[in-house]
Length: 176
Image 1 (tube, rainbow, N blue to C red):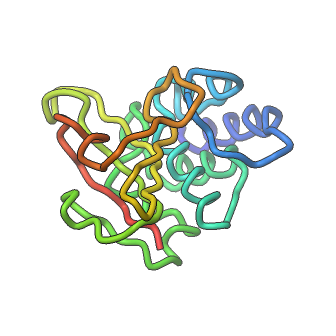
Image 2: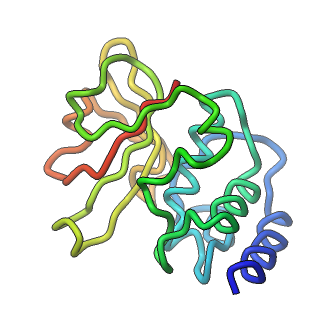
């Protein structure tokens, strides 16, 4: 079933691919809702794919969104019907060959750079999760891509604590 679905989704997604590579913001804006992942549109369950796609751009290893989604779907990074397992994102081969680290607390963030952040939107285990890509600058200011699914611009925060404010953190990947 997964093999048939992943091939069908890849064919659909490949014809939607933009000509230029740029960060994706807003998974319910533009062409992104037309992309498929698993049984649903990426508008519903594509935040992990978009976070990995944005991270690969940051690491100067860009890959088409359709290929990122295909790998993550085909090689069982899926978590049921609801997107990906956020704890398995470093299994993507272009991320696994880096020196990226999985962190469990914001206090473990030690420098500027790119990060993939996964958090609970409500009470842990009983609510949705959201995963997004963020860049922390030298001054500690944070630019988050796809922080909100209906916003086409990156979100700006003065600190990582302000970004995660009152949300339950699942994990953070420090990209290196």
